[in-house]
Picture 1 (cartoon, one colour):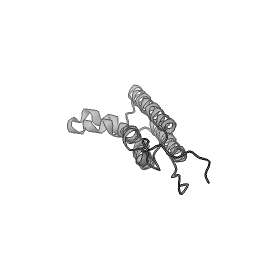
Picture 2 (cartoon, helix red, strand yellow; picture 1 turned 60 degrees about the horizontal axis):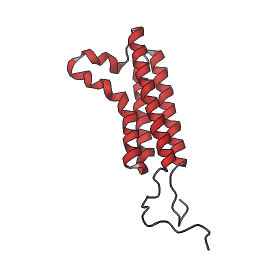
Picture 3 (tube, helix red, strand yellow; picture 1 turned 90 degrees about the vertical axis):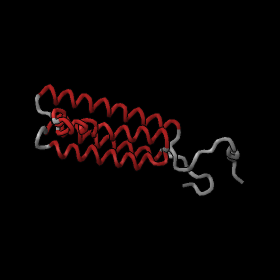
Picture 4 (spheres, helix red, strand yellow; picture 1 turned 120 degrees about the horizontal axis):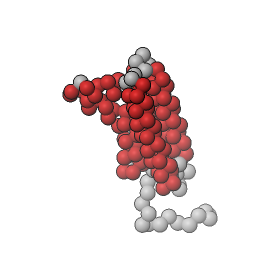
Length: 142
């Protein structure tokens, strides 16, 4: 017989969703990544080597591109709050967005591109770590 108490009927959490602590950790990390993106944008503007998403700011209808890099952490935060079972998938998408953004910026501003690549790596590591913080099924262990 198992020594674990029976699960509460009022607690209906799905296997694969993030625990409360890991949800807070993922959200805090992606808020810090958002702050780092803001710091990179200010640095690029100050140095005079704007990234592709900052240079589009003066192009009228393409100024919507300004928010593209910020969508990556926003998607992960919303997913962690609403449907944390899909946080790993959202993290992979966010990693891809930031990695593509850094690749596009290599020729225009290599220093900022390096910062974006580091943030993509941080997003990837957070995603891998969050997989460890998922709830497991009581019956199967997965």
